[in-house]
Length: 242
Length: 253
Figure 1: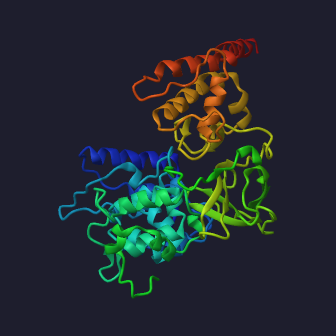
Figure 2 (figure 1 turned 180 degrees about the vertical axis):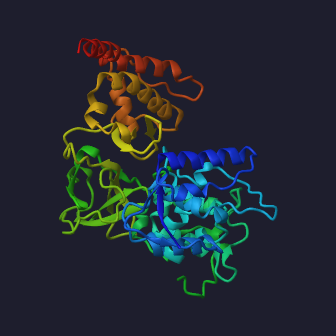
Figure 3 (figure 1 turned 90 degrees about the vertical axis):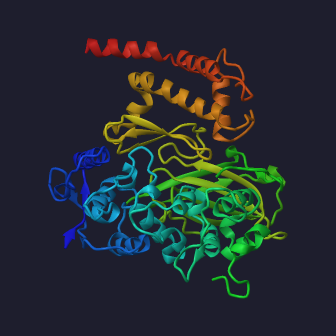
């Protein structure tokens, strides 16, 4: 059991340096010493114990982190904290293959950007924040492995008016999430704007936003407004929507 | 959010008609007061009024009564908003009788500044301090809200950022250039009477000597106009002279 820490500027720089060099092909060991070196990190206060465990999905990771730090102030945009957590869980957010090699992805997935805090790109902070807002009600965005940035997450969470609106997230979940298979429906996040896909949903809802007070709606009311192209994506109409 | 067609003639609430004051109450989250004049918008008296507060992924909504009888909830504590210094507001009027939830009027991207008080002036550039590593400053620009100059927390002296001649001369011309480039490369149509932040910036810039209206049409290179605008901005201050004077004053100390 460890206690959660916060990487300071030096710690973040050294973690970033490790990421850059790893991406350039150097085979380096993960700099876990930064986690509890007083020159590179401090403890989160009040202290919180944390376990280095496996996460089957982003939802599971978000649920666990919420149980640990969900009630604390000033954690959502704490760059040092999320950098520390990504380093602590590096074997989860950047899994080594059978030969021990890793494919290190873009830095913001592990260290939140200092300039533009696109929290949703961070592999732990993004799911944590979405879980804080909606719990398992945003399964559409939270299913999938914790080491992958979900396209659906990027589409919805990058739009402030979408990610803060329960009607929009609820309707999208209803349309595109398959609760039996516990994953997004096939083709939901198609990169082409095919009829009824999530990209079309975003376009249509943006048009609704100039006409309706979407924050006052229930997900079912928003679903009822959608044009026919979304019908094939809706669950059986005879079933209750929620 | 990207705006599209306004089929239902949703009205724009002029920013000057809305006053929002943020009240700090540390260690508790801030609260706010909102006052608005909707009388000249010809809105139905029973139209419902809401004020929404937001910052990034945090959001709260407050019932402010009706157009004819405005009144707010007593508890307007912004406890779910992630930032205590910078909070954006949106005022909405919705149809209470016809189609449920139809939007009748809106003002978005409103900011209450705790140090300036409500309604004293129209702010066209917010300033905030953040951890930027070794980056001295950056700009936050998007379509919906007043742009923000983000200054490295290590330079955490708001007065210096606002009035130091050296900081002004070295930073603000680049800020103006970046903002104008963003505006002219976007698809915003300049409305000289508009309340959008881009309209306010273009109004401010075109009021400077020798600055014409911004160029229109994709085929026109906006850079010469931006160069002229930045020069006019620096002339007005005057940025370089003030910078040299501040250097001379430093040397005499």
